[in-house]
Length: 302
Image 1 (tube, one colour):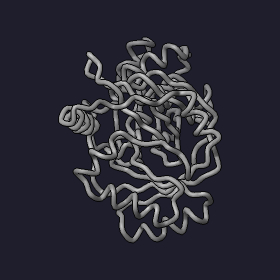
Image 2: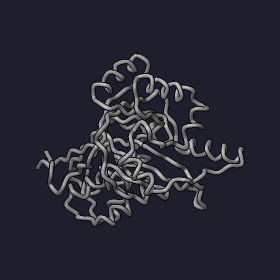
Image 3: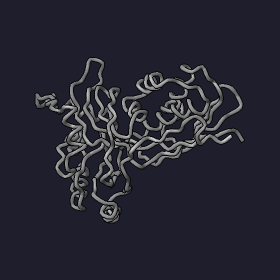
């Protein structure tokens, strides 16, 4: 049996997500507060003897040729010059199309995993450059468990994560494509003649996150209105989370998952038990304090 490396790729939530202008390159600038949480996809890297060999197995809803993990392998090989054979197994627990960053986290895990697995030693700037090419949310998962994120996602400012709450995550049973959600938002702005107010200031967001009472946060998600207008379950779910004692509740990313923050694990467990009767997938999670990617040979079994 060849060597193996096991990785846990965490989900993220957006505690705040303000979509600003649409840029000339088609992307949108954002101001967001990302938090990694304890819901994970499981990934295993396994060596193959044949050079250039590559296999992707497991819970794969997107064909291998179109999967972001395949793109990671291709970019890594181009950057590193290492064409050793690799098999990658994926066990999904983060819903697809849920606004929880599962694909981006998987990409980050595989990127740093390949670097460690083959002891290549790409520099942090090299890894971040590759991450930016893979997707807007990928750089976050290489940097910090909590961060203020700007630009189209490439500007990541790590901050100290809070640990004084628990989450109840709800996947309402339908997926939303980010591209569609951005289109809805652009159409809504065009029809009303208004742009995003762009009032966020990084220092204010950071201070409110680190020092403010959770039930008095003024954070918001620019997608929530346009998504809720198309999917009434969004508003209903947020109402249900607050009914069950949430201090704060919001849509994550462009949807479709929603979350509520609770002051204790007991309160979160009580809410989870009640909400499991209404929704297909309800999970309790905690905010992560740091990302635990492996150092060289850490977790690699010869």
